[in-house]
Length: 270
Image 1 (spheres, rainbow, N blue to C red):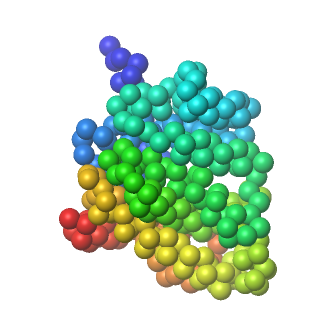
Image 2 (cartoon, rainbow, N blue to C red):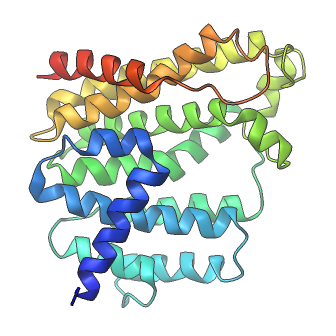
């Protein structure tokens, strides 16, 4: 008979490899003694994010439960119990988890970013905090490790925003800073956003450059993080190859190209 904890781990692994294929590939390179806890963390983050995106009626309560646990209260929801379970083995940065919850609360009311600073704040909350949590799990400590881990998470979130631009627009969500949209022509429609995407790709690339400086600070897991970052960054190159949004839809990187890019950067990380 499968223990409940084992069933949760199976779900966490399955969810990671089904929903986050790029991260799932990279996670196979993680040290075995932390890999399962990374899956558990991913499930906790994903469940909260899905609750918000899907408009589940208890989303705000579930966010509040994680915030309460971060402040020293009991773990009363599934996500809080997942975080608490991992925290028994690793020193998780609870301040970062609270900041993640703040990003989820912002999503409850819908994105509204006037300036690039607003967008950066949001990207840090929903993804830079995940970078900080991963860095802590892999043993990186100190201000420089936190800065670079946060930057790498923000780079990946900005990549998500660009990759999902048309999908989000169809759902009535625009994450890009309105001042940047206005400065580059006032439109995010296909065929009318080349200058805007050039600008946004440059901003994401700068964050990748900053974030990758932190690889040397990781006591372990360096190859996995290098693989994840390189495969995610390749989405930006695919947007460029696709003509900076000339046609609607997601930029899709072929699996063979992902693996080739990851292999090259893993070799450099080693």
